[in-house]
Image (cartoon, rainbow, N blue to C red; front, side):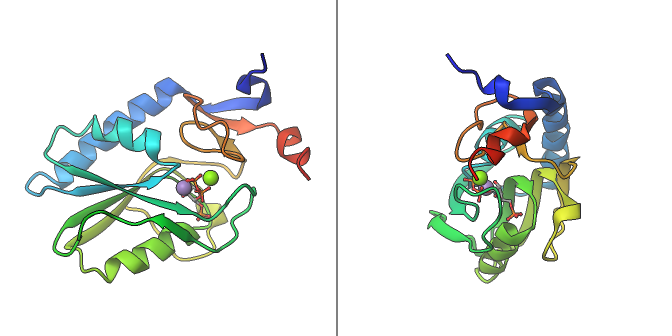
Amino acid sequence: MESLLDDIQSVLYSAEDIRRRVKELGAELSSWYRDEVPLVVGILKGASYFLADLTREMPIPLEIDYMVVSSYGTSTRSSGVVRILKDLDYDISGRHVLLVEDIIDTGLTLRYLVDILARRNPKSLKIVTLLDKPARRKVDLVPDLVGFTAPDEFLVGYGLDYAERYRNLPFVGILKSRVYAEQR
Ligand code: PRP
Ligand code: MN
Ligand code: MG
């Protein structure tokens, strides 16, 4: 049986590194929303594991919603076109909204989402991302809270995919270049 591990060059952030950092992020966010009930919005699919673990480190009243968007498709590069496949279930006007992302790369996905959501008049709109690659930014987008500032490598695991696979790895690793070179 083939193993996903054979395609990993190295582990960048171990499951334990992530667990420890997510605990810190949860504590920080809980202090931000001490007197408010935030609507925590996971940007699927990438943010699924991060949102699940993060909210379990936030022992405060909160609500959860999801948006499903896609910009990469099965390519390794951002197309620059963001598609909303599922919008929020709830009206966010007057609400404190926290967007949860797995990674910010070019910033195109969140720039687009923030512009759309800001027009719905939330009381506040903040961004937490597990990983940030500021070196890759194409548009102005600064998250409010970052787990790790990541190097410019092709990362997979803990929600991050290549062609929809590898999301279920419990760590964030660097994908061997032969894996995506094979597809060209
Ligand atoms: C990935 C990732 C972020 C976005 C970051 O999502 O999860 O949402 O790309 O890239 P950007 O800053 O350059 O826009 P993707 O579109 O691959 O969808 P997925 O979450 O379903 O994998
Ligand atoms: Mn995503
Ligand atoms: Mg993806």
